[in-house]
Image 1 (cartoon, rainbow, N blue to C red):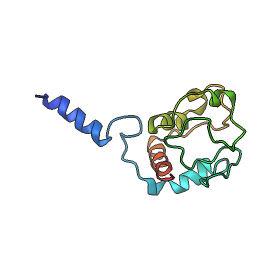
Image 2 (cartoon, rainbow, N blue to C red; image 1 turned 180 degrees about the vertical axis):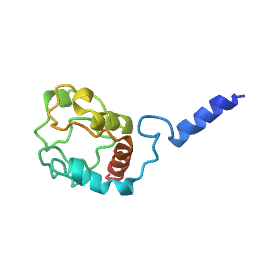
Image 3 (cartoon, rainbow, N blue to C red; image 1 turned 120 degrees about the vertical axis):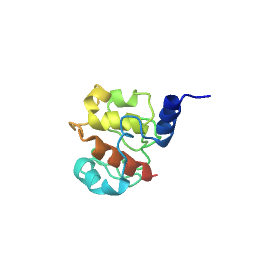
Length: 127
């Protein structure tokens, strides 16, 4: 039998209420403008339409540095060896240069945790 504290923790974890982005209830509907303002100059959401950066359509669950028709990846990104999970995206959007040292993205990061959670929820809908 689980203790009440452990059961509550498990329930919160299962509901996605713990974790770096999950501590804020995400609202994908609030993030379209954030995408345009924070990402849209360099990234599109159209498959195969790359700009300065690769298309972010389908980014959640994709291996880093693997958009086939995008040639601008840094060696650091091509060799990163991870999958873009919600947690990894949160770290990267917050501090790109720290998350992937040697990467080329010229973006200082989005410090607002709620805006990041909303943005990641929005990107998650772009399959």
